Length: 162
Image (cartoon, rainbow, N blue to C red; front, side):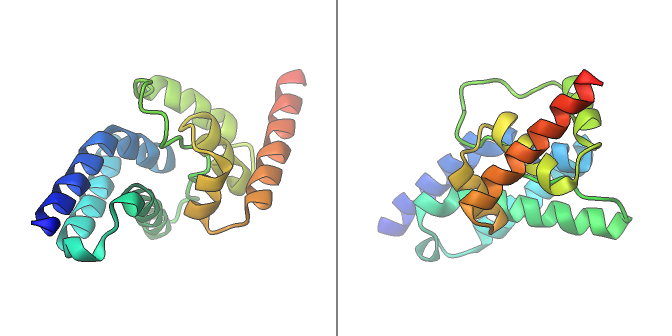
């Protein structure tokens, strides 16, 4: 019974985050179909695991980390520079997913930045992730996430001033 309840909680967490996961992947791959494929693959990975092996509190971060890694793999396979995941807000579930045209405009601005900085900005500003979440997803110290954000934002400001 405990595993059934845990599995239901996991399924609910997955359902609640599907749109955010697709958006997250899209910002990294710039292709909606590929983004949906990556999310599908990540969900399958978590569903294939035993419910007893999964802590419901870590499901969300596990999903975003898995999607991030799959996006990196896809980008490497195609020989393109992957987009970082630092600008994704996985906590904000009240806003609607950005439309693809807006995503393309934002990506065009962020492409001028180093990918490390662009990823952190995307995760924080677009996806509403905290620096604690960003640091966990990217496996970097929280101070590094903050400094990449600050440096990237300064470079963006300079782009718009010039």
